Amino acid sequence: MSKEKKMTTTITREEFMSPGHLACQGCGASLAMRLALKGLGQRTIVCIPACCWAVIDGPFPYSSLDVPIYHCAFETAASSASGVKAGLEILGDNETAVLAWAGDGGTYDIGLQALSGAAERNDDIIYACYDNEAYMNTGIQRSSATPFGAWTTTTPVKHYKKERKKDIIGIMAAHGIPYIATASVAYPEDMVKKFKKAREIRGTRFILIFAPCPAGWKSRPEDTIKLARLAVQTGYFPLIEIEKGEKWTLNLKLKERKPIAEYLKLQGRFRHLSEEEIAAIQQEVDERWAKTLQKCSL
Amino acid sequence: MSRKKEARKIIFESEKEMPPVPMSLGSMLHNRTGAWRNIKPVIDLSKCIKCGICWKFCPDASIDIVDEWPQINYDYCKGCGLCAEECPQKCITMVEEEK
Image 1 (cartoon, rainbow over the protein chains, first blue to last red):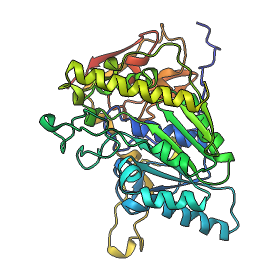
Image 2 (cartoon, rainbow over the protein chains, first blue to last red):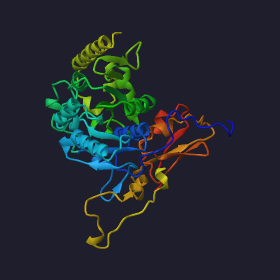
Image 3 (cartoon, one colour):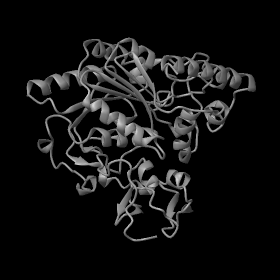
Image 4 (cartoon, rainbow over the protein chains, first blue to last red):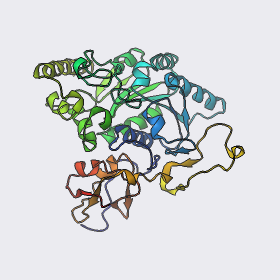
């Protein structure tokens, strides 16, 4: 190995997140923030409602990000970001990007009306939701992002969740906002590229990030990336972009999808599922995948 | 960039020193999360191909690039094992922490 060879870095080396933060081992959300800020750069203001990141960031008077953070109430991520953006515009600053960074509880359930309002007004914000499929910060309670069959503390094994996951991408696409994308922590280049692209666009931009949670999913911390990758490869979480609510693009075309059982068996929260239930999940994933392909006109 | 910040604890002597609203005055670098670790990653640099994958996937940003080689910052590494799992050369091994 020659000494002169440079280390391959496909994403920017600049770091905007410092170590020492309070995330669990193998946290998908902290990796998601690190990659998102690599895409957005220094001139960013982050609005964080109650979610894991409200804790990960650190207690007063410390912060683990090198960009300003505004901690807001649970339901107000989008409206706070709109307000911060309006303030910046009055000051004549059109350059700084405002990022609302909420978990799935603050997006799918509690913050949905604020998000819908901001999308309707087409406020110039980037709304990123890191989806770990339950209220992980408060102790793994069921949210409307929790998938069918999953164990949580409010849907115990005997009464596991019987409802399917809410289609937030469909909801946001119906608003006709300029840019919607899904990203996964297992594909950092794709994710950084999407945040860079979102920064250049004006209007409400929505990015859904798949962020595995070892503590809540009862998976091994070292499997975080493997799970995120399997979610994409099984077709459970397709990587897509939607422009102006109409033009759908599939970023990662799969010739052959892996069976969903491979993804489920790595997680303790799905351990109780029988063969029939796994087959039912597989069928649901197949249906959703077919719909996605249809929308991307493939 | 982040490492240029001070890893300093902030202690207020009196209430008057405190800012009027809760705001961040320093970075979390004083919080040495390396103490959370039971197993630690060790890189065998002779097998390393400098692909940058360990650096890219570290959720704690605790793998530095020093002279174009990956170097683990044991002050902050929480020992999740992601780097060892994702390394294509399998040159990172997780070893038991000595107590």
